[in-house]
Image 1 (cartoon, one colour):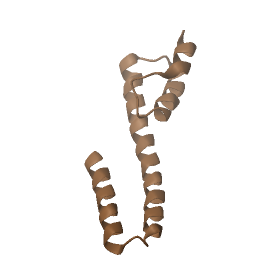
Image 2 (tube, rainbow, N blue to C red):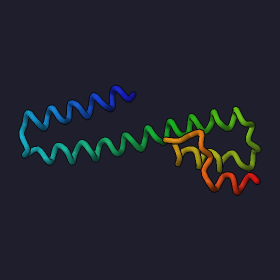
Image 3 (cartoon, rainbow, N blue to C red):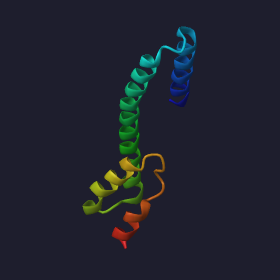
Length: 90
């Protein structure tokens, strides 16, 4: 996945250099498209990691939805529970 993302950035820079500096529209279109894909990837990976975390730690039923939401929100750091989770589970 990281290779695909870095390849797409590399191909964007090549396209900008080929077509010159007047391709600002291409850059804006690509960044808007990539933001949607980035949000989708974050949601899917965050949900999968949250489900795995819930199964591994055997989170109580009444906290599973909350853990799922927190993990989806904090997808770049899925191991860190965040300041709010520690206050709730005490």
